[in-house]
Image (cartoon, rainbow, N blue to C red):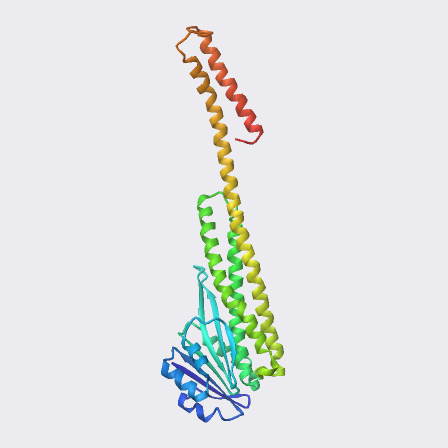
Length: 324
């Protein structure tokens, strides 16, 4: 599956034309071509590599999935690898969609492994800012980066909301809530690690694009890229703070469980001490030897009174110390 667009002199003049016609437009300095390939085969990648003069290492990176977010610069073009991030609001599962981008002076080529990356959202952003089309490839790349980074920001926001939900039930006494905290904390930490893997490298990617010697971003587009860079920094710093929050939640949960266990042991020990009193008294009076009150009614009264008085004294003493 492929999709094409042709911009000339700041206007969209042609869309969804055959890929074979690209060679007629790329040599025109006033034209900018966008080519999108979804799930391309080796022959498709070889074709664009030959058509645009792409470096074999860049084509190989586009062919192989699970690349690290990066920007590689070659003599005639640049290659960028990035990930869009999304979360399922019901399950909280994190999803990532990889996209490879070839950047030349007159063309932007996007390569997607599947249709999980919503390229329609990118196209909508291009169409919403027609006044920037005149800036060529830099404008197309800005719309793509803006969509990707906004997705990162939204994913981090979603993780922050879910962490706050866990914090709200952190001191809940319900046993099911305790198990939920442990499971959700682990899931949040795993999702945050995945987010950090795709968010942190984007700082270097955008920073490199702002270099003047690459001639990708012209002067009028610099504020827009600076805005994207600011969002990348904010998302990066946010992930760092969320990591500390998750660690704090897990440590606090362990401390709470330890305190609860100590409280339970304290109560069990206190009741065991109280129960030991009647056991000791009745054991003493159960001897087969004469003792004060042996075979007499007052002996039963004395032993019963000792049991009640000592048990009450222990209970009141433990209650004052908050052991029961």
